[in-house]
Length: 150
Image (cartoon, rainbow, N blue to C red; front, side, top):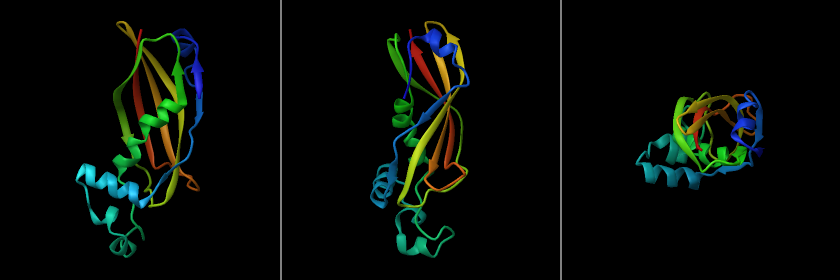
């Protein structure tokens, strides 16, 4: 985790690499649970037998399941001291360059790409890349906006 001692420290750190998160396994159970909650039970996610014959050779995680790991990964990547709240303000851009086969182990890597001043707040813009172990292409790249309330 990268800990910034203040908002000024954060502002001085644009472009900094925020490091790497702990690994998270995306099991078939996790995929099935996500499918049930989101009502997206497409066979490529939840039917291992049919998926074995499909384009990916196995079931794959939903893109939004992979993206849902952004919250905990961002909490692991940065902390800014001296703010009253840190709020997930939204996303500017999200892409899913590669699939996540069931059983994959994922981790996040972050980079602070911008700091934007607001009225009584600062937005930290973080590029988060989520990778499956062994893959050179990210499974997800998201530009996250974290609103830091002063």
